[in-house]
Image (cartoon, rainbow over the protein chains, first blue to last red):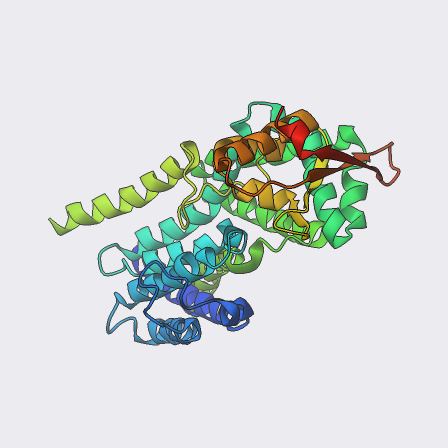
Length: 258
Length: 141
């Protein structure tokens, strides 16, 4: 039976393959890049850099990073840098409302690429820990953001407002049905905030962590169905860390039996 | 030395995420993942502000997103966007044009479109649209 340190190396390897495939699929369909003005750049407005070239470079780097990581482990840092340049530099600045094109869900791949690039410095165990931390902590951070208003966020109106506003533009009858009663809107609000703020409980055991991960995943799927909220876009691929962990355990178990 | 550096990087990444959540920092890619975190008091809303005869015969429209995302005082604008009601929108417009100075273009009038949503038990929401026309001269008072 492999010890936990080498096991985490295998987990990381599996995750890298899965994540690279997921991000390639995600980024391949990034059609906004074609409309980005190359002159909109705080690096150098006259640089004339083609955003399409950077997009292609990013895709190539992800493929290269997945294959050539053992030869040049810092390549993931280069991938993170190109990803940062595309999203922070080009996409945000192209429109006065450009920040809406780059939401918090787009930030997750940057942190994943950046952390993978630290693998020469940090152990595989720490890398895997950070990946799990980014995912689980993002919900805790969301809970803090809501709780910052005291009890006001849970007044039911907030959820109704957000749901109705989305319904205005996207026609979401399920969303309206869900928050039509203020009492149930309040109940849902409290459940969401308490679940997010109770995230530190994952420190008690890994089973609790897995339970939370599954619950949050289901929560995001429900949001996707009811609200057409594609927060899992770009962000959701980090959930692959858990399939990587279970796949590694299954393979290790099979090797033991053999 | 290498171990110390590795520890520094490891704990710094964790610390910076905590800082982004607590402070909160929202400077991409550092974010506290707000996701619907703004508090809404009611679902009264100013959906559009229209400037009539602004820059000639054109009508310029500001949607809720427009006046929430631009302007001279982001903190105050954010407050207006979150709890938009007519008196505050008027104050916002006054300041917007006052800061612009005497030489800045002024519209003849401003239309404020309000949309109010109601929910009655499980009935679908109803909306009431109210349009208030304010001559610019009134804004200057």
